[in-house]
Image (tube, rainbow, N blue to C red; front, top):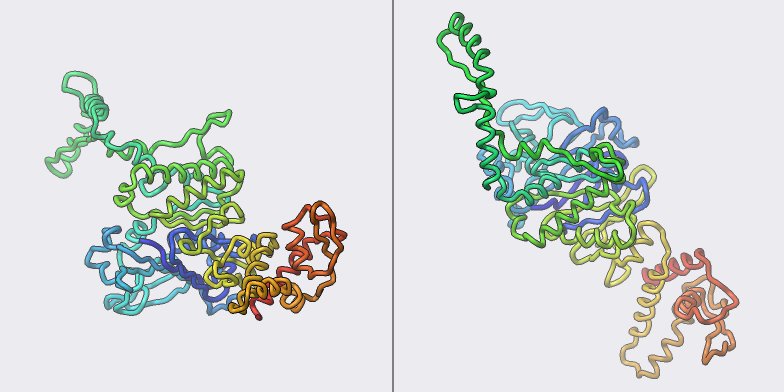
Length: 499
């Protein structure tokens, strides 16, 4: 089961309706700061948990939205929903699971609009406090009784924010990353001899054997006085305080994480940097466990990861190790990553990953999916992503553009002889680049042959930069600038788009 679509309307930086179609399990969100990447995570959390503490609807609504425009956030889940989330097999929830292209589908939504609907013949009030689910039979979002708990079991998410909440990291619950690691480590401990010994000691301590001291023995007097009053006022009723052995999970859920970075304290007392580092380390251990016990994941409900800038405080090699772990986890779980890191983006594979490039407009942010980046047959490349998302002109992107134009030029007459083809290569700079380059062939380039600098000849800015990159041993009278690099890239993009 996975998320296949997220729809955001008038939520914070997003004005109007924005649809994110998601095909894969590893999703990259790229773009400059304040362009809506983290807001996508917040929208998902809004559907799951409602308004954050001390926040009002007006705090989350796009400031350009009109009074009759509302915040609406919707998530579409597809997959084997009834098998994974057993609550959806209950008769009263079955109408909300429908089929689409042989997949089970449910739509979950939260809206800021206060409205009244007719549900099962009765009026029902909906507001931002109610999470709703689509009923295809009535063509409306509804709030059947108990659905909040059911959706909570469907929607098990691990958020790692830039300002991580330590409670999210150290939560030992079975649906969280830490709890899953503990469950995996504990194994069959609660079936072993040590637990049996503890159970026996617990019984002797709380209930005794009738001869020695015990908690039950000490409470007998209180039980007797309560029974006497009940006998007088109500009737003959027995009462006994029972100190049964807690469920095994209660023991480690009550635990906490102690961290020693020179001073041993609870994790919640450490800085956010260390908290994030531990959370991210847990994800990597989780990935390692998947390789050791690959079948175990089928026995657990899906866990969705939303990780905000995981590269913070990590050196390049550590970032490489981290993304390798995330790729591994994404084979079975969905991971959404907001990132600025070129080391993480180099892993992007358009055939098995999704990527959205965010940019800010006048009244709303905009997200462009990678499938719309089509400069090359292999788009989007690392250089292309960096240029579109950050306006970052790189020599790698320049090389890709030059190579794509060059190949198109020499392939435009496939029937010519090899000699003619070489001639066409010699004319590439003049016929193609000079034709679309405002600088024309005005920059002198001098080849180095046998250690001897040759007589310079004029080339376009684009060819000069290409030669400068590939032949740094050659001494030139001109050195290109970052502005030149961007100008040359723009020139080649224009030629590619307008042949």
